Image 1: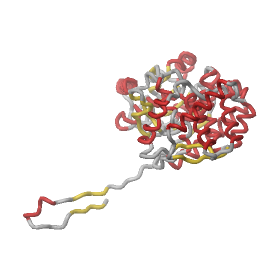
Image 2: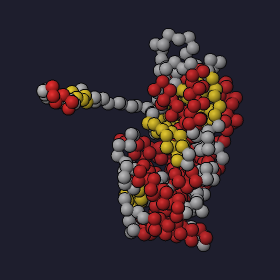
Image 3: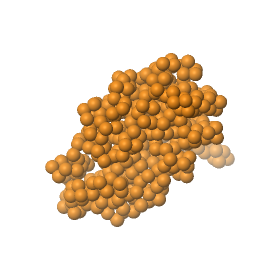
Image 4: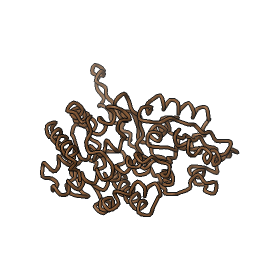
Amino acid sequence: MNMARSPDQPNSQRSEYFQYWDVSASFDVTYRVICANGVLLSSNPLLLQLGSSEKTGREDHGRRLVFVESEVFRFYSEAINRFFGKGSRIAILNATEKTKNLRLVEHAVQQMTQFGINRRSEPVIAIGGGCLMDAVGFAASIYRRHIPYVRVPTTLLGIVDAGIGIKTGVNFGLHKNRIGSYCAPIAAVLDTTFLATLPTRHIRNGLAEVLKMAIVSDATLFQLLESHALDLVDACAKSSPVSLRIINLSIQRMLEELEPNLWEHDLYRVVDFGHTFSPVIEMFKVDRLLHGEAVAIDMCISTVIAARRHLIDIAAADRIIALTNRMGLPVINSDCTAANMQTALDDIVKHRDGLQRIPVPTAIGEATFLNDVCLQEVMEACEYLQRLFDEGALG
């Protein structure tokens, strides 16, 4: 710690007195991303072992406060109730983009208070999709200024994206994730057998984030998606070998991008591909578009902009748009209006600290950033995609 102050001065000048201290500290974070199927089997103690301590001297070792998304509980209530002991509490939350707000966080905090969590050795467990993990993670980050928690994503989007980073947050008005924090879980436990009960649309929702990583960072992953585009949903639902390879590659690429920049000190992030225009069109009519669907549209718009600037060759751009369509994802939407696109451009400059920093592909598996995109070229890209859709020329 450094201290500085103004030199001693005559009494007549003491009104100019100035003193300060520089405080410097660092915060190391380590968390584990674990692929482990059958996490709710009584023979698998993993979830109860994570974060537990033998030094607490408490007799209620293994008790947990478990937040479960309501739709997940509908399918897995018996397994969840059987797995967690009598000392645990199951708190069921209806977590959607509509309900992911401060009221949901307040409800989670109330559950934490009533349960009487031991601050360090009884990690909260969040079982559900991205909305639930975002809200519970945020609650954990502010309850007693941070308690440990474990993420158990049950959606493909959660497994490949929302569940494996350290961001938490909730929506505020029409603003997606406007209120939030960086708070690493002690672990993210990825069990792909949950995908067996996930609706087709939600599997495709998660595949959009897989496609994102393929476009900006892994040509091999892109080729795998091209080869299996038509049977990917079924493959994921069955946790087939090819789906596991695709999922694991996507996770690997995502973590490689996140790890050096967990707190987003560098705002040039290729993982923001597809996240320039999507927050606005996703929140414009909540639940009309899923997150991955909005991301897919954004990726196509950004790809067309790159192609029109000759940053990516037409053949590669066509492959990206065609694959998006073949994977059952939208490439354009009626909410891509000039007003919404202008709102997106204005807001992204604030979010990315004064510059657009828009990621666009330059080849399959590579990307660059733009800082001078105007509304006219965004709308020209939207109109081009709409014509492709209207003419049935998406490939």
